[in-house]
Each structure stands twice: as structure tokens, then as C-alpha cells.
Image (cartoon, rainbow, N blue to C red; front, side, top):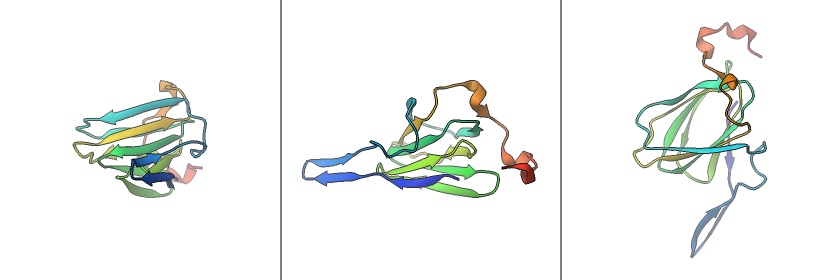
Length: 128
């Protein structure tokens, strides 16, 4: 199930610095970001890819369903990182107009890694 990691924040009179060195539980293979989002994103889960989501500016909500548990996370601080496991069905919603969401992924893009069937349409007694 998805979980939040607190990222180290180094603050002084010059400003704030946050580092992701040796913190995410995977090697980063892909980096992308979303901004000017006007509708829901995501709506899938993965076979292998694990992701780390960081809202660098503004805020958004991430709904997670792993077939057993459901939760909604609000990302609104650049020192909070949401780890989304491969099995986590996720949708990203309610982006503020200034939101910038950074995504770090454990695998390169592969359309075969995406599962577009959510858990509500499956027999969840068979979910591992």
C-alpha cells in the first residue's frame, strides 16, 4: 500500500533545499512532471513500476486502492513523498492551478506494464 516518506529539508537564511539521495526504495529510471492539469490523471496500476510522487508546488490528491485497502493522500509540500507500489490503483485529482507534480519511476515507460482494470471490477478475494 502507498505510504508517505518525509524528505530531508535543509533550511537556512538562503532558502530551502530538499534532497532525494538514497531515499526512494528503488533505482530511478524515469522522471517526469505534471502541471496545468485540468482533469484527473492516472486511472491505472502497474505490473512492476513503483513510483515516488512529490508535489513541488501547489497541491493535489492521490486516491489509492490496492484491492484490500483504500486511502486518499493530499500532497501539498515538497518535503513529502508518496511511494506508490505497482499494485496500487491510483488516480490523481483536485490539482490546484499552480500544482507541479514530480514523478520518479522505477522502470522506463512500457505500455505493457499498465493495468487499466481497477479492483472494483475484479474478484478481490483473489488479489494477493
